[in-house]
Length: 257
Image (cartoon, rainbow, N blue to C red; front, side):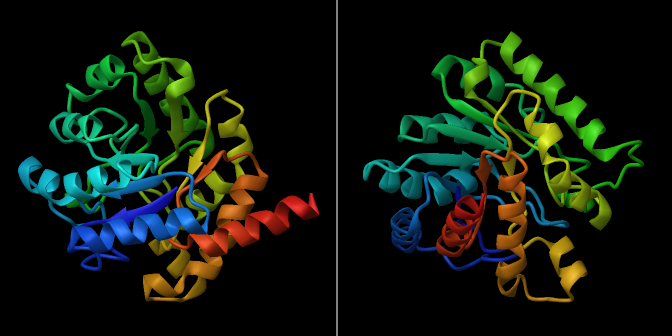
């Protein structure tokens, strides 16, 4: 899953794709490099970022979603809002990727069920504007696993087919460095729940704290390593900025296995 943010303030690539044609070109390039899915987001979730009005979020993402979908790209819309998801599904998106675990907008879950879309349900502690919370986990892998399975059960009750649900432990969203590492190490336990597991470690701040690399875009080597490790342990989807590097590393990892 390639990341295409169309925001002015995302932590790594904010401001790079304010022109929809640039975002579409980048999305197509990522597909040529080996991306199976292009994830388009119009609201930054970096700690301290403020919520974007739905109309503004839609203005940013809709032309990009439409442009990529028309070219046959499998598009995921990274949004917490039913109104944005509805317009993007109408424009050809096939997946809704919600960092709130379908909790922020009560209209989103029935919409996904009605449209028979696929969905990524993520664990998030706190909110971006609050710089996220860091709860006291008893066992971070088990606590996150239980939360995600609970949300998946609610999704199924609402009419979303089990095979359309993927789970994301939400690396960086209210977790310490050791907890993020534990979630990657525990990918097998999370994947063992029976749902596809998505891991999104790419360029995140906890990698900077481990490596001492302050600039997010320089964290790709460590990001690729974590993605490969997550895949080796059972992740079905990795969400990345560096598609070409990740594909190469995955190919070598598969050959070694």
